[in-house]
Amino acid sequence: MAFEIQEQVDLTPYNSFGVSQVAAYFADIQDPADLSQAREFAASKRLSVLVLGQGSNTLFINDFPGLILYMNNRGRQILPGAGMLRAAAGENWHELVMFCLQNSLYGIENLALIPGTVGAAPIQNIGAYGVELDQFFVELEVFDLKTGEIRHMSKADCQFAYRDSIFKQDLGQKLVVLSVTLQLSLEPVLEIGYTGLKDALVGQEATPQSVFDAVCAIRSSKLPDPKQIGNAGSFFKNPVISRSKLVSLRELYPELPAWDTEDAELVKIPAAWLLDQKGWKGRQRGGAAVHEDHALVLVNRDNASGEDVVLLAQDMSSSVLQSFGIALQTEVRII
Ligand code: EPU
Image (cartoon, rainbow, N blue to C red; front, side):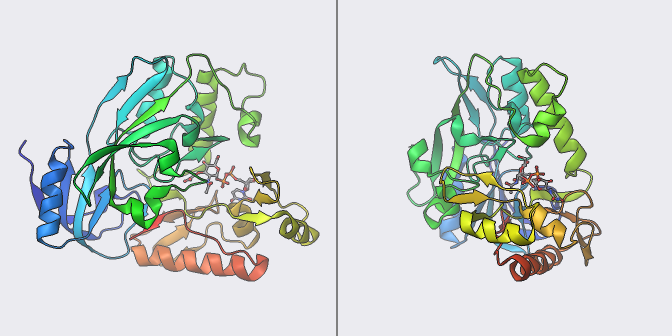
């Protein structure tokens, strides 16, 4: 099919919240070679450009006046080096996890059922149940919208951190991920320390398959399926606070959970727990609501606009700031 740029495209099917904003221009990128043409088009009309995978971490609060690059290139390739694998940005992440399991490439079972594409995975360094993408990351290929060149970026270049990377900073916004290369293990590597996961595996042998099944079961029981009710997973990041702050908070809230971080002075605490204390589960504002079973997940309950979601999120973070003195940061990208 010849490459074309569409106009006035309804974004409802392209964002997992299912909000209905319109993009002025939209390009379905099945072949990365088409990016040069898309780049020239944007430059000639002075359009801002937004890269979109499956839109599972993006909330549109307005129509988008620029060009959307919908990354839809496909391909998975097991490379000659033991356990090396390259996948195109437009591949579905969960399907890649299943592909790895079927091909005895181990390590990413804990990242099963994370919505979105392979190309989106490094943007926020996806993580779940004690595993993060950067542990398996080797390099990626990007198209640079500023120069029109394709280049490779190493793990150090990507500056991964908790739900963060260079792609979330100004510099990185001009880079379109084309493919990602991972180093997986030929032997099972099991990470089953995360409380909920450990509990789910009691009485079973831990194998890559049983861990994969348990992760799928936990996620399906706690997190709403975006195909049934619009949502973008965790709306806020889990805050990282100092150990002394934790001690003072625990004087009032002895039950407050906390996880160690790489920095001995800092701990991570669950935003969901803070929000739950403030009674947010199930509350609604306009068409947007907090999920009944998980206080960190905002859902499109009744034809919500992006603004409904943002107003609800603002009220939630104000209440946490007031009660706990902690400023929540959004994990979801707001456009
Ligand atoms: N909790 C509550 N109330 C709730 C929900 C949870 O008090 O409504 C408590 C739980 O009891 C538990 C703690 O909060 O002690 C953590 O909950 P959970 O295990 O559900 O994980 P989370 O911190 O809310 C993070 C990630 C998820 C990931 C899970 C599992 C972030 C922002 N979120 O959630 O990632 O799946 O851990 O590893 O780091 C995502 O990024 O979109 C996402 C879903």
